[in-house]
Length: 423
Image 1 (cartoon, rainbow, N blue to C red):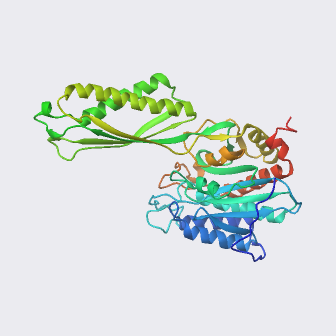
Image 2 (cartoon, one colour):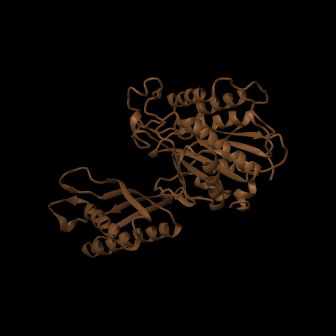
């Protein structure tokens, strides 16, 4: 277990850390990020801001994954393990709603918004930096990953890994702000926690023509109806609702009221918690399509090449699986260090997907959900809503969670990696 050398850092100069009170600084920082959101792999200004902030804190850093940042914070007790802490950076293509609450920090970039808490994630990671700067008495290294492009598959984590971001890393920790549980609560679970995300693109090819002559046409609209009408019952017979979700986001075909179109396009997505469920859905989609083709081929036997279809299935983020040993050790530490927090150590699995899953396929670790729902403050909107906002009082707690769990891992890696010393 060793620290990765930063032989070509962008910033070598060291200056005094910020002296502003931590919580106020985190809120200010989060609002600065919120005002200037950028889309996936377009986070150039965000990247420069992060590099300047790290330089001001005296932390060596370099660019990674084009628009991301990788930084190293070594301890003063010599060799030891390395833990990576990750924050995502990108915003979403959403026009932020104007509300009284966000007057001071509403997005200034037209049509782009931090609607999923990534502004808060970056602020919390900087909070952890300042806490570690006050206590460098630990072995090993804290690796800081400011990751671009979480929102768009294949995601920025794959690029970070490919470019050596996890080299010599022994564990990884991530925190995400979610609105489905209350502010002041932390949720997670061992094993599968968040779903895989998969996409299918289908083009059904019929034979267009005037609707007064159905015998001379093959209607792809009816083909699409037959396909979807058979798909959902077929899946329901094989998988229980807790195993998957599947939906169609786009159904498009035709342009004229009195003509059968030539094609119909279907764009859909499905999420699962097991690879075998994903494969089962793959094969069921294809089987249902073949039955539709068989039915309409009999109707249009004289039409060469029709009916037909083009299908593309894209498997994006894998299932996010929290390491059981790491999760158990972290749960005990959170209970010990944060008795004021409401803890959900067996939170229901989420059909949301996260490319943090790629890190967990490489090294053990944990992904936490930090609640932001607060009815008293009017914070009820779900992630990705144009009115989404966060309870800024949780920023300090998120920074402290990053710091506390990472520090405990660096000092006692055995209980996280092997289960040793866990009662």
